Amino acid sequence: MDKVEIFENERATGYNQFVETWIPNYHYFLGRLPKLLSETEKKDLLIVGCGTGNEIEGFIQAPEHWEITGIDPSPEMIKQANEKLQHYENVTLIEGLLSDIDVEPKYGAATLLLVLHHLEDDGSKLKLLKDIAERLVSGAALVMLDITGDKNQIRQNLKVLKFLLPDGLDEEQVSNRLNRIEKELYYISEERLSELCSEAGFEVPLRFFQSAIYKGWLTKKKLT
Image (cartoon, rainbow, N blue to C red; front, side, top):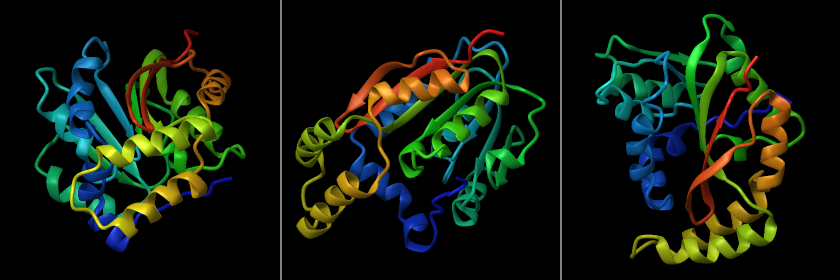
């Protein structure tokens, strides 16, 4: 169940350009995260699958002071994040899996962006959500961004996504990518995401953002 997709080589070095091309309103979403979580009392933030550190940049520029821990299994992605963020004393970057780090101290909030659709729904998605819940204080917010929907929703939204892509992209590459999303990624329905969150110890997630196939969710760890 601990099957993790690690971005290396060209996939890692081209990641930033890829997400900017393929996720409409990506930077708008990242830019609103600090405000969305601004009422968090304990400003210790856990960023799961931090990649090259894109969402961390927004938090270090926020009016509030955040202590930020980012974790990612990809050495190349962590290397890129370190190059951008090494001068910020409030940022800690860890190469590895979330299950590798201690459950204490607890974090006041967490983000999980563009990660779940790489994990099979064979217990792997649930395990990650449980691992996050275990490391959060009671009532802590979790923000997710992921490819979500049933097969028909994904198929229809992929048609919309194609119209939202920048002009001038290679048609064959676009076709291959759309086909990979539809047939190779492990997206789940909104109902299934709610079930997994509930089982992992979170409230039913609220969908607050959508850009074609990509949906943003806000939930909280159940009060204990």
